[in-house]
View (tube, rainbow, N blue to C red):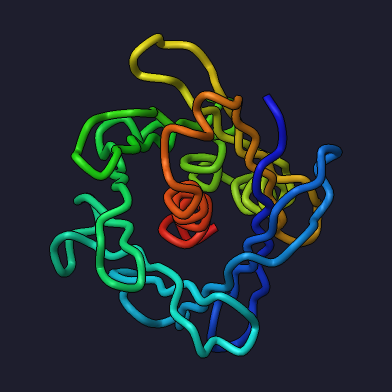
Length: 202
């Protein structure tokens, strides 16, 4: 298992920006391969990825299958609207721990993606409800590092991880084994990485 992509988020008053970079073997950022920009107050139905900082060349997108259906499938498509893959949040499981499924372009289930730390997941959801100390718990968990694991649905084996690597700003590294990396287009993995932040308001 090795580092494949790095996702960096930059918050501004009006937009969320995501930079997708390749990774060196040691997990440090390398070349920029895509840039996404999302209006902060816009509905999270479509995110567009561009090929460079100028944002004059659309590379790919992910979009909700149905308008205003945040629990439905998201389609990852190239600039010509060709299907690359899909992903979907598993609503019931996510009530306790954020869980997603990733599909290939034909709709076959490939991966399960879930938070690996149940205790931290529960604190994020319910810690703020604890009397007196709830507000402090919410402040603390904002700075705790968390990560997701990728499970191959055919073998039920862990094949990758998505980890937050910085404390004060959002930078994540996606690690996958060779077989899993080659199962899907890299743009599907980049879309899932951004979705794990953008669609959960992290």
